[in-house]
Length: 194
Image (cartoon, rainbow, N blue to C red; front, side, top):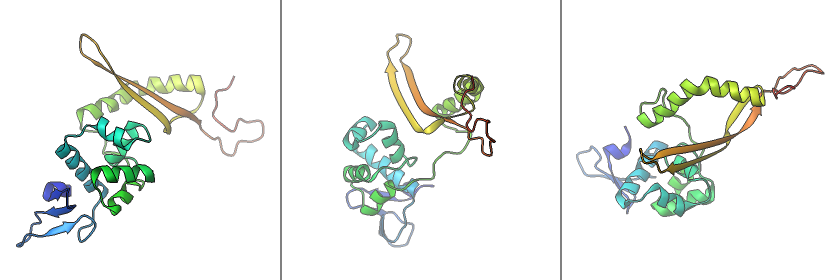
């Protein structure tokens, strides 16, 4: 359970109140009570909700890279480089320790299979279409993978009289397997053979 569900964040003074003690106490987010990355995510979401901000507004204010990467970082799945962590800290009124946390490489991923319906549809897309995608990529490029690190992602809304559509474009660098120990005359990489 996240701290923001147990305690009440005071975004103006950066304190937490509502501790389950006999006397009312406050803890600074960087003082007596250590903060975890998921707690910072909850705090950011609380501030976003309180201010009525959209992700579009937030990513425009922070700038510097793809909105997907900025939102991913604020949700705890990516890191922000120092200038962007500083911009996010200023926007959200975060402490120096919280700013540094945004600049740390997080533990990424979610439990599988995902339970959120929208995320599950992506999982389902890969489970159903993955074997065909794999066959087509290997036929075109060879034995390897599409990078999810050297990667671009674009999303757009397409108007449609039957209901607007989500268009997603992904572009990842092809990374061939290295055939270590390959003897002379044997291809060292899994690139497509003629």
